Image 1 (spheres, rainbow, N blue to C red):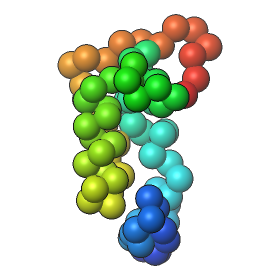
Image 2: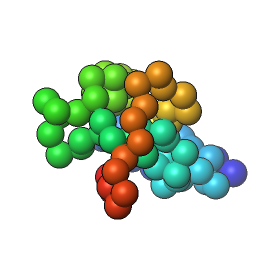
Image 3: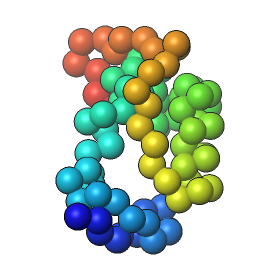
Image 4: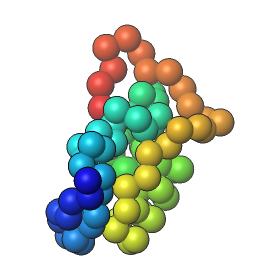
Amino acid sequence: MIETYEHHGVEVKIRSDLKGRHRDFCLCHSCGKLDITDRQANCPKANMLYALCCLCGMTTPVFECPDFVEKPEGGET
């Protein structure tokens, strides 16, 4: 089933079974380079992808990345 809701100020469509599950799939949220509290320190690729997602009103999980770094034990984003 497809539903509509507002994300980043834009009305978007999503498969109901995937709503709210982006972090479950996106490699960035398991990466030690992701720092959502400090855009200057954050991964430049993640910043660019986030800017594109906001510009286009999309959410795009990352499944592959050559710059991935494992988070230290207990590291949460």
